[in-house]
Length: 258
Image (cartoon, rainbow, N blue to C red; front, side, top):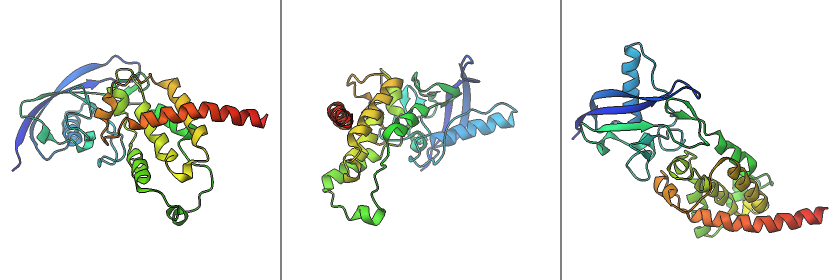
Protein backbone atom coordinates (compact mmCIF):
# COMPACT_ATOMS: atom_id res chain seq x y z
CA UNK A 1 0.00 0.00 0.00
CA UNK A 2 1.39 3.36 -1.05
CA UNK A 3 1.77 6.12 1.53
CA UNK A 4 1.57 9.86 0.88
CA UNK A 5 4.26 12.01 2.49
CA UNK A 6 5.03 15.68 2.98
CA UNK A 7 8.74 16.44 2.62
CA UNK A 8 10.78 19.59 3.22
CA UNK A 9 13.98 19.97 1.19
CA UNK A 10 16.92 22.22 1.99
CA UNK A 11 18.74 22.35 -1.35
CA UNK A 12 22.08 23.95 -2.21
CA UNK A 13 21.72 26.62 -4.88
CA UNK A 14 24.73 28.17 -6.60
CA UNK A 15 24.45 30.25 -9.74
CA UNK A 16 27.89 29.34 -11.10
CA UNK A 17 31.40 28.12 -10.24
CA UNK A 18 32.51 31.43 -8.75
CA UNK A 19 29.16 32.47 -7.25
CA UNK A 20 28.42 32.28 -3.56
CA UNK A 21 26.10 29.41 -2.71
CA UNK A 22 23.20 29.21 -0.26
CA UNK A 23 20.54 26.81 0.92
CA UNK A 24 16.96 27.29 -0.18
CA UNK A 25 13.95 25.53 1.33
CA UNK A 26 11.22 23.83 -0.71
CA UNK A 27 8.18 21.93 0.48
CA UNK A 28 6.69 19.05 -1.47
CA UNK A 29 3.24 17.82 -0.53
CA UNK A 30 1.78 14.45 -1.39
CA UNK A 31 4.84 12.55 -2.64
CA UNK A 32 4.37 8.76 -2.77
CA UNK A 33 6.63 5.98 -1.50
CA UNK A 34 7.18 4.79 -5.07
CA UNK A 35 8.70 8.08 -6.22
CA UNK A 36 12.48 8.06 -6.63
CA UNK A 37 14.57 10.84 -5.16
CA UNK A 38 15.20 12.29 -8.61
CA UNK A 39 11.46 12.26 -9.30
CA UNK A 40 11.05 14.27 -6.10
CA UNK A 41 13.49 16.83 -7.53
CA UNK A 42 11.53 16.76 -10.80
CA UNK A 43 8.40 17.76 -8.87
CA UNK A 44 10.29 20.63 -7.22
CA UNK A 45 11.49 21.83 -10.63
CA UNK A 46 8.00 21.64 -12.11
CA UNK A 47 6.73 23.81 -9.29
CA UNK A 48 9.58 26.28 -9.78
CA UNK A 49 8.93 26.51 -13.53
CA UNK A 50 5.21 27.04 -12.92
CA UNK A 51 6.15 29.93 -10.63
CA UNK A 52 8.48 31.39 -13.28
CA UNK A 53 11.62 30.61 -11.25
CA UNK A 54 14.95 29.01 -12.16
CA UNK A 55 14.84 25.20 -11.81
CA UNK A 56 17.46 23.31 -9.82
CA UNK A 57 20.37 22.01 -11.89
CA UNK A 58 21.30 18.40 -11.18
CA UNK A 59 22.82 15.52 -13.14
CA UNK A 60 20.85 12.51 -14.32
CA UNK A 61 20.80 10.26 -17.35
CA UNK A 62 19.82 6.59 -17.29
CA UNK A 63 18.03 6.65 -13.91
CA UNK A 64 18.71 2.93 -13.65
CA UNK A 65 21.82 2.96 -11.45
CA UNK A 66 24.18 2.49 -14.40
CA UNK A 67 25.47 5.84 -15.65
CA UNK A 68 26.72 7.25 -12.33
CA UNK A 69 25.73 10.86 -13.05
CA UNK A 70 23.12 11.18 -10.29
CA UNK A 71 25.50 11.61 -7.36
CA UNK A 72 24.20 13.82 -4.56
CA UNK A 73 24.90 14.29 -0.87
CA UNK A 74 21.64 13.54 0.93
CA UNK A 75 21.64 14.34 4.64
CA UNK A 76 25.43 14.23 4.53
CA UNK A 77 25.66 10.80 2.89
CA UNK A 78 26.74 10.06 -0.66
CA UNK A 79 23.61 8.90 -2.54
CA UNK A 80 21.59 8.93 0.68
CA UNK A 81 20.77 6.53 3.52
CA UNK A 82 20.30 3.27 1.61
CA UNK A 83 23.45 1.18 1.20
CA UNK A 84 24.52 0.01 -2.27
CA UNK A 85 22.04 2.34 -3.96
CA UNK A 86 22.52 5.19 -6.42
CA UNK A 87 20.51 8.38 -5.95
CA UNK A 88 18.22 7.50 -8.84
CA UNK A 89 17.32 4.18 -7.17
CA UNK A 90 16.67 5.72 -3.76
CA UNK A 91 12.93 5.84 -3.14
CA UNK A 92 10.87 7.92 -0.78
CA UNK A 93 9.90 4.86 1.25
CA UNK A 94 13.25 5.37 3.02
CA UNK A 95 11.96 8.65 4.45
CA UNK A 96 9.20 9.60 6.86
CA UNK A 97 6.46 12.17 6.31
CA UNK A 98 7.57 15.48 7.80
CA UNK A 99 11.28 14.81 7.23
CA UNK A 100 13.60 17.71 6.45
CA UNK A 101 16.16 16.51 3.89
CA UNK A 102 19.37 18.39 3.11
CA UNK A 103 20.59 18.00 -0.47
CA UNK A 104 24.07 19.12 -1.54
CA UNK A 105 26.48 18.50 -4.41
CA UNK A 106 29.45 16.20 -3.86
CA UNK A 107 32.00 18.10 -1.76
CA UNK A 108 35.54 17.49 -3.02
CA UNK A 109 38.20 19.89 -4.28
CA UNK A 110 38.67 17.73 -7.39
CA UNK A 111 34.94 18.11 -8.18
CA UNK A 112 34.32 21.86 -8.52
CA UNK A 113 30.68 22.92 -8.46
CA UNK A 114 29.37 24.02 -11.86
CA UNK A 115 25.87 25.02 -10.78
CA UNK A 116 23.52 24.05 -7.94
CA UNK A 117 23.91 20.28 -7.49
CA UNK A 118 26.06 19.64 -10.58
CA UNK A 119 29.81 19.14 -10.22
CA UNK A 120 32.65 18.73 -12.73
CA UNK A 121 33.97 15.14 -12.51
CA UNK A 122 36.29 15.41 -15.50
CA UNK A 123 39.25 14.55 -13.23
CA UNK A 124 37.93 10.98 -13.44
CA UNK A 125 38.07 11.19 -17.22
CA UNK A 126 41.75 12.15 -17.10
CA UNK A 127 42.53 9.07 -15.00
CA UNK A 128 40.79 6.78 -17.48
CA UNK A 129 42.35 8.55 -20.46
CA UNK A 130 45.82 7.92 -19.02
CA UNK A 131 45.49 4.13 -19.14
CA UNK A 132 42.03 2.73 -18.58
CA UNK A 133 41.91 0.87 -21.89
CA UNK A 134 43.54 -1.93 -23.89
CA UNK A 135 45.44 -1.03 -27.08
CA UNK A 136 46.90 -4.48 -27.81
CA UNK A 137 44.99 -6.37 -30.54
CA UNK A 138 42.76 -8.89 -28.76
CA UNK A 139 40.41 -9.88 -31.58
CA UNK A 140 36.65 -9.70 -31.49
CA UNK A 141 34.21 -10.92 -28.86
CA UNK A 142 34.30 -14.55 -30.09
CA UNK A 143 38.11 -14.57 -29.73
CA UNK A 144 37.88 -13.18 -26.21
CA UNK A 145 35.31 -15.77 -25.25
CA UNK A 146 37.71 -18.56 -26.30
CA UNK A 147 40.31 -17.53 -23.71
CA UNK A 148 39.96 -19.72 -20.59
CA UNK A 149 39.68 -17.56 -17.47
CA UNK A 150 39.26 -19.09 -14.01
CA UNK A 151 35.84 -18.23 -12.60
CA UNK A 152 37.21 -16.50 -9.45
CA UNK A 153 39.32 -14.23 -11.69
CA UNK A 154 36.42 -13.50 -14.02
CA UNK A 155 34.14 -12.77 -11.06
CA UNK A 156 36.69 -10.43 -9.49
CA UNK A 157 37.16 -8.56 -12.78
CA UNK A 158 33.40 -8.18 -13.20
CA UNK A 159 33.03 -6.94 -9.62
CA UNK A 160 35.55 -4.20 -10.39
CA UNK A 161 33.89 -3.43 -13.72
CA UNK A 162 30.69 -2.57 -11.86
CA UNK A 163 32.17 0.82 -10.95
CA UNK A 164 29.94 3.50 -12.50
CA UNK A 165 32.31 6.40 -11.84
CA UNK A 166 29.79 8.37 -9.80
CA UNK A 167 32.37 9.85 -7.40
CA UNK A 168 30.62 8.81 -4.18
CA UNK A 169 33.90 7.31 -2.94
CA UNK A 170 35.66 10.66 -3.32
CA UNK A 171 32.82 12.62 -1.71
CA UNK A 172 32.71 10.25 1.28
CA UNK A 173 36.47 10.16 1.84
CA UNK A 174 37.79 12.64 4.45
CA UNK A 175 40.88 13.07 2.24
CA UNK A 176 39.02 13.37 -1.08
CA UNK A 177 40.88 10.29 -2.35
CA UNK A 178 39.94 8.49 -5.58
CA UNK A 179 41.69 5.22 -4.80
CA UNK A 180 38.57 3.04 -4.95
CA UNK A 181 37.56 4.41 -8.36
CA UNK A 182 41.09 4.17 -9.81
CA UNK A 183 41.71 0.72 -8.33
CA UNK A 184 38.43 -0.59 -9.71
CA UNK A 185 39.28 0.65 -13.20
CA UNK A 186 42.80 -0.81 -12.98
CA UNK A 187 41.76 -4.17 -11.50
CA UNK A 188 38.99 -4.61 -14.04
CA UNK A 189 41.62 -4.75 -16.81
CA UNK A 190 44.67 -6.04 -14.93
CA UNK A 191 42.96 -9.24 -13.80
CA UNK A 192 42.13 -10.38 -17.34
CA UNK A 193 44.51 -11.97 -19.87
CA UNK A 194 43.81 -9.22 -22.41
CA UNK A 195 45.09 -6.60 -19.97
CA UNK A 196 48.44 -8.19 -19.16
CA UNK A 197 50.49 -6.62 -21.98
CA UNK A 198 50.00 -3.09 -20.62
CA UNK A 199 49.38 -3.96 -16.99
CA UNK A 200 52.26 -2.10 -15.40
CA UNK A 201 52.32 0.87 -17.76
CA UNK A 202 48.59 1.25 -17.17
CA UNK A 203 48.94 1.08 -13.41
CA UNK A 204 51.75 3.61 -13.18
CA UNK A 205 50.04 6.09 -15.50
CA UNK A 206 46.63 5.90 -13.83
CA UNK A 207 47.93 6.08 -10.26
CA UNK A 208 50.16 9.05 -10.98
CA UNK A 209 47.39 10.88 -12.81
CA UNK A 210 45.13 10.21 -9.82
CA UNK A 211 47.76 11.66 -7.47
CA UNK A 212 47.74 14.92 -9.43
CA UNK A 213 44.09 15.60 -8.63
CA UNK A 214 43.04 13.71 -5.50
CA UNK A 215 44.08 13.20 -1.90
CA UNK A 216 45.81 10.23 -0.30
CA UNK A 217 44.16 7.08 1.00
CA UNK A 218 44.52 6.54 4.76
CA UNK A 219 42.26 3.49 4.98
CA UNK A 220 39.15 5.08 6.48
CA UNK A 221 37.00 2.70 4.43
CA UNK A 222 34.28 5.30 3.86
CA UNK A 223 34.61 4.77 0.11
CA UNK A 224 33.46 1.16 0.30
CA UNK A 225 30.50 2.09 2.50
CA UNK A 226 29.39 4.86 0.11
CA UNK A 227 29.88 2.91 -3.13
CA UNK A 228 26.49 2.20 -4.78
CA UNK A 229 27.97 -0.99 -6.25
CA UNK A 230 29.61 -2.20 -3.01
CA UNK A 231 33.06 -2.45 -4.56
CA UNK A 232 35.51 -3.80 -1.99
CA UNK A 233 38.56 -1.87 -0.86
CA UNK A 234 40.49 -5.08 -1.64
CA UNK A 235 40.99 -3.60 -5.12
CA UNK A 236 43.05 -0.81 -3.54
CA UNK A 237 45.47 -3.38 -2.14
CA UNK A 238 45.75 -4.97 -5.60
CA UNK A 239 46.43 -1.55 -7.12
CA UNK A 240 49.16 -0.73 -4.59
CA UNK A 241 50.83 -4.08 -5.23
CA UNK A 242 50.80 -3.55 -9.00
CA UNK A 243 52.01 0.03 -8.60
CA UNK A 244 55.06 -1.07 -6.63
CA UNK A 245 55.84 -3.67 -9.29
CA UNK A 246 55.29 -1.14 -12.07
CA UNK A 247 57.98 1.20 -10.75
CA UNK A 248 60.55 -1.61 -10.98
CA UNK A 249 59.38 -3.21 -14.22
CA UNK A 250 58.92 0.07 -16.11
CA UNK A 251 62.35 1.30 -15.00
CA UNK A 252 63.98 -1.92 -16.22
CA UNK A 253 62.19 -1.70 -19.55
CA UNK A 254 63.28 1.93 -19.96
CA UNK A 255 66.90 0.95 -19.24
CA UNK A 256 66.76 -1.83 -21.85
CA UNK A 257 65.45 0.54 -24.50
CA UNK A 258 68.21 3.10 -24.00
